[in-house]
Image (cartoon, rainbow, N blue to C red; front, top):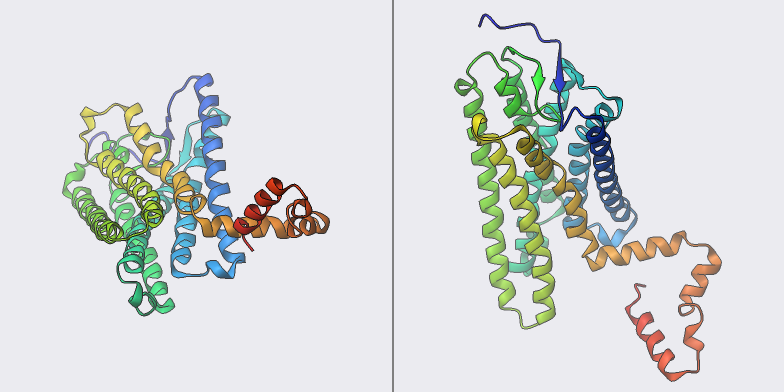
Amino acid sequence: MSNETIISDFLLLGFSEQREFQILHFAAFAAMYLAVLMGNLLIIIVVALNTHLQTPMYFFLVNLSISDLGSTSVTIPRSMTNAFMNTTWISYSECLTQMLFFLFFMSTDIFLLTVMAYDRYVAICHPLHYASLMKWGICAHLAVGAWIAGLLNAALHTGTIFSLPFCSNVIHQFFCEIPHLMKISCFDPHFSEVWVLLFSIIVGLGCFVFIVVSYVQIFTAVFKMSSMANRQKAFSTCIPHLIVVSLLIGTGIFSYVIPSSSSSYNFDEVLAVIYSVLPPMMNPIIYSMRNKDIKAALWKLLNWRLPDKNRNLINKGFWGCSSNRNEHLSTICRSLKDNRPD
């Protein structure tokens, strides 16, 4: 208690104090942030412009993209700025705001992934009841519930942490994270924050178990399908989804519960990158780039954006190849036209 001081700002030490590593840090984070922006904004634009994609599945996907954009936007740009400007400073209010919104978006992300798993479970295991179980009103309530639950979880953690006095302002992380703020607290946080952490861990594990059970049911239904193509399609989407969910929840929980003395700061930072940056990068690939409906919508969007001359050539048969007298080329062209989205 004698070391307690009034903290007005914090120092985010990041990955390294060497200038070469700071430039590398800036470049790597800039590339990852650009990938997150491009992938998730593309999903939002394509779904918004295509009426065929305005279904419950893509409605939840848009919410997930917004959440992913938010979680990365409150941490990566600030870390990039500090690395580029060769500074570690962040104000007390900025640190509080960053933690609040990061936890808000990350918690919402987990709840939305749980809702999406339920949506896929109903679609595959109970297709005849899908329209009645996943009405737009129910979907809206599920999405709003995920956002409200995420906000309440974030407010609970942020209020608990920043009600504690701090004996130091040095944070060995590239953003304001709960475990590192607990380390510099003057009070033993186990009497307050540990119960909040325990509650969140139980909720996170509950969501993970629910997702796993949902996909077990989905896999059981898929194995009963006679079509091998449908099986491969289901597995190609479900397995990567489970991997990303495991990375998000597993590394997140691990980084919050490991003892302070048993982990190095660099290891903590790597874990933070895995659970805070990789899932927002992977979600667009898993849910969109491997999805035929999204690919078709992207083709239509590209076709609409092309000049009229090129678009007319495409619509006439891939640059006039349909009129080619060569039988082999004509067969190829017809195949391309049959597989091209309308």
